Image: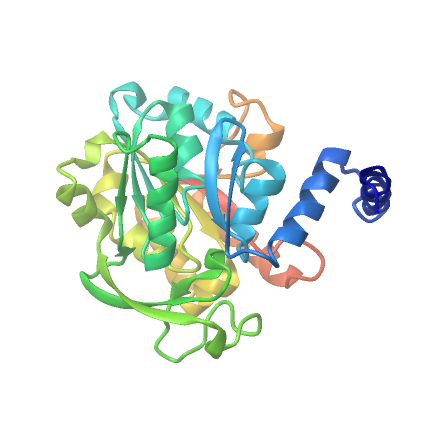
Length: 318
C-alpha cells in the first residue's frame, strides 16, 4: 500500500472518529486514535504537552487525560489560585503547597508552575511514586517539588495500598475488603503494597516546615479524606484551605460520610464548589456555610452514577 493510500485511509478514519466524538477537534481525534493504538503496544508512553514532558502508564485514566487534553482534572486551577491570592492570609509569604495523592504529578507540576511556590508531593503506591519522580525529573523540578512515598493517615504506621491497573483508582485496603472500586476491578487484577503512613502534620514537620508556611493542600485519596482532615488540624488552624475530593461511595468505604462531615464541621467554616471556579468571577464567589455541604453529598448519592456526577471537588475554607 502506498504512503498516499495510507494517508487517505488515516484521514478517513479520523473523519469517521469525529462522528463518534461529537464536538471534538481533528487534533483530539488524532490523539484519541493514537492513544487507543499505542496503549495496546506499550506499558508506558513519553510525550510533551503544554510545556510539560510526561511519562505515563498506558492503562491509566490520568495518563490518558494528559495525552488527550494536556491536563487532568485541573479545570479552574487559575481561578482557584487567584481566589487564594485574594483570600488566604499572607498567601505571598506562604512558601509551600502539599499535594496528597499526587499520582504521577498531573496536579503538582502545573500547580507548582502556576503558583510559583514549592510543593510536597505525596504518593504511596511504589510504581506510581516512581513515575511521579520521573516526571518531576523530566521537567527539571527537583529543586521545587519534594516527592514523598507515604499515605496520609491520622496515625503513623503502615497501611496496605491496593492498586488496580489504573493507578488513578488506587486506595487503602479496608478492614472488610470492600473497596471503592469494587465492581470495577477484581482483587486478582490488583497489586498490594505495604507502605508507610503518617499524619499530615508529621509530614510537614519532617520537611522542616511549619503549618504557617503551607499555602494550600490539594488532596485526592479515593475516600480517605477524613483521615487527611483529622491529621492536619494544625494547618487548618492557621487558615490553610483544603482542596478535596468528595466521593460519597469512597467515603462510605473509609469511615463513612458522617465522619467526613464531622471532620469538616470541626475544622472548616465554609466551602466552595469546584464548578464555581469555572463559571464565576473570583471576586463574586460566595462562601457557603459548612453545614450545607451535606446537601451536595445527598445529591451525589441520589445520582448514583447514572444520571450525572458521582463526585465533586470542593475547597474547604477554615
